[in-house]
Amino acid sequence: MALKLGGENSRKKWANLMPVFMLLVVIAEIAFLGRLDMAENAAFVNSWADSLFHGSSPSGAGASADAESARRRTSSSFPVPEVGTCERWLEEEDTVVYSRDFDKDPILISGGDQDWHTCSVGCRFGFNPVRKPDAAFGWPQKHGVAAVLRSMESSQYYAENNIANARRWFEPANKNCSSLALTPPLPVCGCVFEGGGGIEPDMRGYDVIMTTSLSSDVPVGYFSWAEYEIMAPVQPKTEAALAAAFISNCGARNFRLQALEALEKAGIKLDSYGGCHRNRDGQVDKVETLKRYKFSLAFENSNEEDYVTEKFFQSLVAGTIPVVIGAPNIMDFAPAPGSVLHIKELKDVDSVAKTMKYLGEHPDAYNQSLRWKYEGPSDSFKALVDMAAVHSSCRLCIHLATKIREDEEKGSGFKKRPCKCSRGSETIYHIYVRERGRFQMESIFLRSKSPAHVVIVSGDEVVIWGVELFLAGSGNGEQGALELSKHVGWTFKDCIRSSNLTMEALEAAVLNKFNELRHVPIWKPERPESIRGGDELKIYRIYPLGLTQRQALYSFMFQGESDFKNHIERNPCSRFEVIFV
Image (cartoon, rainbow, N blue to C red; front, top):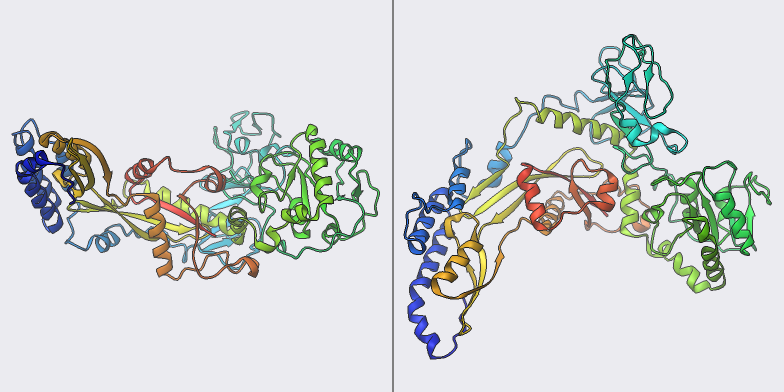
C-alpha cells in the first residue's frame, strides 16, 4: 500500500479512513490464509462487506450474485481437495481410461501401403479378415468405416477434390441403389460395396479428406525436408538466359503460356526445356539445370489455394528465385519475404519483368532475395514444412484415433470430470496440450486469481496501489473497488485484474511442462542440421485441437484475453496443440 498525501485536508481524511484500511488488511489476511473452504470465505467476507456497504445480510434481498455463484460452484458433486493438492487431485479426478487401447488395438486402415516406420499412435495399413477397418480409401464404405479421400491433384481437374464437394450428402437415384445421382455435376458412381451390400439413402460423402489443401482434415502437400534438400547451397549463375522453364502441359487451365510469351515480349530471355515453347533439349536433370539460372518459372497448371507442387520446391532447392503462377496464397509458402515473385494476373507480367531485370543487373539486391539460404528460412516456413516431418499416413491415424476418443467423450456414460479446482480466491484449470504430429496429451495447469489491483485517486491525490480486494471471494474485484471508492468518497481510476488465465500464461506453462519433460520436437531429426537450432524450445502457435492447418498456421487467433478465458470456461479440460519451431 502506498499513500501520497496532499495537505492538511488529507491528514484530516487519514483519521477518517483508518477503519477502511483496517478492513482491507483483515480481508487480505482472510484470503491469504486460504485454508477455509472457498464458499465459507466468500460468504463470510461478502457478509462483512455487504453489512458495511449496504447494511443487509447476504442471505437477504441484497445478496451478491457473485457470492451466490461462488456458493453454487462449491456445491458440486466433486469433493473439495485439501489445500495445496489441486493439481494432484485434478490429475486423479480427470484421468480417463478409454475403452480402446490403440497400442493393443491399433487403428486399421484398409488399402494403401504402410510406407513409414514410426507413429505416435498404434496404426496399421492392410487387410484383416477378422475385423472391420476403421477407415478405407475410396467411397462409399460400409457403415462404421470412414471413407477417406486421398489425392494430390488439383480440384480444377478432379471436382471431388474440392472439399465442399467431397463432404456433400449423396442421394441414391432409386431405392434399389443401382446408382447415385450426385450434385453438383460429378461422375455417377455405382453404389454396390466391394463384398456386397448397398447404401442407405442420404449417405454422407467422404469422412476424411486428404488433399493439398491446408483446410483438409489431413493435408498431403508436396513439401518435406526429407524429399527436398531445401537448404542446399547456392551455385554460381552461369547461364546467359535470365530464367528457365519446364512446362509440358500446354493445355493448362490458367494463363501460364500467355505469361511465358508476355515475358519474352518484355525482353526476358528464357530457356524452355519442356514440351511447350521448347528451345532447349529437355533431356536434363531439372534441379541441376535450374541451379545455373537466376530465376525459375514455377508455373502451375491451375491457380488454386495451397496447390503448390514440386515446381516451386525444386526452385527453392536449386537456389533460384521462383516466379510463380499458381496458388493465390503462394506467399504463405515463401521461405522469406522477398524470396518469391508472383504473377497474380496477366497484367502483372510487365512489372514482374522489370523486377527480374533489376535483380539480374544488381547482384546485391539479388542476393538479398536468397539470404534465407544462408541465414535460414522464416519461422512460418519452418512451421509449414515441419508438418510433413510426420508422414501423412501417420497423421491420418492420429486424426482417426482423436475422433474416436472425442466420440466416446460425447457418450452419456462417459466419466464426468471436474477439470478445475477452486481454493479461496484461486481457481486452477486443468487443460491438455500435445505437440502437432503426436497423439498423447500432457497435463497443463493454469491459475486464475480473483483479486484485483486497484488504483483510486481522491481530489487531494491520495493513491492506493497494489491493494487486493477479496470481496465475496468471487473474482469480482472491480465491482468491489467501485463500491469501496463510493464508500470513502474517492474517484475510482483503474482496476487491473490479477489473473493468469491468459495466452501468455498458457505459453509459459507449456514451455515449462515440455522443458521439464526434456521434450524433443518431432521435426528435429528431419530438418537440415543447419536450421535445427539448439535444445531451447520455441513456440510458434498454440491453438485449440480440431482446427485445420490453414486455421492453425495463418488465421486463428483468440480475440483478446476474455475470448481465451471464455474458451477455457466453455470447454472443460480444454485441449490444445502446440507447434514448436
